[in-house]
Image 1 (cartoon, rainbow, N blue to C red):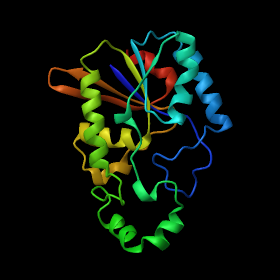
Image 2 (image 1 turned 90 degrees about the horizontal axis):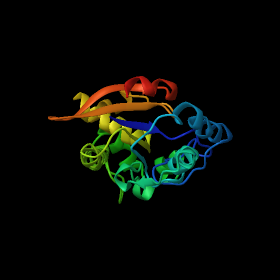
Image 3 (image 1 turned 135 degrees about the horizontal axis):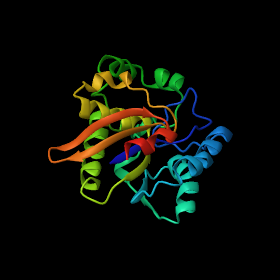
Length: 200
């Protein structure tokens, strides 16, 4: 079983295009990360993994310290790379890239900002990493991002990538997948930390 959890709440990203841009955990987010020690501390995860982003690493660090387990960093599960737009306000993007911004609205799933990637790219790299992890000892907990989780869910459920925002993963909520002989199987989503143990 692989548990994909979105990182804890952050601060400083409202109104901005946040992909790889670093944003810190908010005070509530730090409390959420510490709370995982209580809700998940008794689960003997075979592996703890995280995207390389600081917000994901800060979310998993208290649990890793409790379990005395190293965190495997998985660049393939980092948030979408928004290229030249990353870290800019949406207002400045509308002003400085009007044609590209309009194109993104017309074909959201396929659009790549300058020097960036689209959500199909995200799904490709994430599914490759998850497939590799599925052959190793389980269960595995991965701290990652909403864009990654949404992209994976579209792939696993057969939804078009244009339906990306049908899925709304909350902070420290999880999506659970299982390795089968036919590949990865979607089990559940929007799972609160205290409910994870019932799936393992």
